[in-house]
Image 1 (cartoon, rainbow, N blue to C red):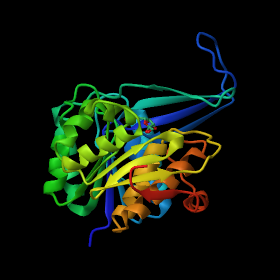
Image 2 (image 1 turned 90 degrees about the vertical axis):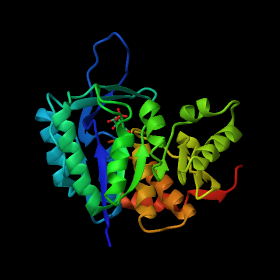
Image 3 (image 1 turned 45 degrees about the vertical axis):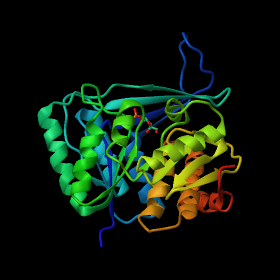
Image 4 (image 1 turned 120 degrees about the horizontal axis):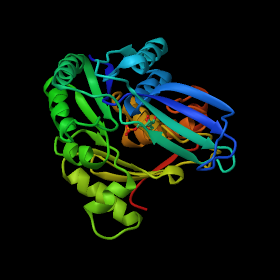
Length: 313
Ligand code: TA6
């Protein structure tokens, strides 16, 4: 039986977190501390899956230049199979400025490298091979400039025809087009559900989730930051409630959520167990200084404090 989970990060990054005592636009600021981590959404998902104890995790996507080497080296050192393909120029830096005054986070994300037809063919070949070996393939994050926003739909088709199940965590057009390829899981943002239906409020979110399930997507989750999440799994609706925590850095919480859900999903856990595990992973990530980092002890502790109820209240 296959156990491998492959994550796909088309625009892999080095996530740099700057601790700035008092962030002020238009001034010169000196950072107290800087942390650098291999990132981009799929890389974060891979790292958290590994930290949660999933035995076989691979990461692919585009990585190039000095930054790409940093990303691939760190992925390998973590114990994740690095299966990236090259592109032209430098992989991007994603900068996150944490303000010491109010704890807010301000992100600046570079566009990323140039990708031509040959690079794309290499990625498709690599993806086909990894999908044959994998139980689940998770596509996460933005599509690099110059590539079609329908790309996820094509890649999902490749993975599925090679025998893997597929999760998609994207936004905007890549998500809307990717939905047409019916991935097994999506995690739209609250504001992406809004254009799907008229009206607003929480009931509206449940209607959006139901509509997406009716389109043939069995697992739909909308995370709501400190308010937890609403979800639709196998035709039923769920409300996920999380404890109040003192968040250190919320960047990567969504990725940790996806990793937690995937961990349970490939083990055929119930909807409630998958959602509980996922939400606890998201919360645990917020307690770490770096993006996409879940400590087992914190995760175990938080698991006891997450509550998942069936229904739309
Ligand atoms: O989810 C957080 C994060 O993965 C950051 O680490 C940063 O790299 C960013 O998202 C990239 O998102 P994007 O959607 O542009 O691929």
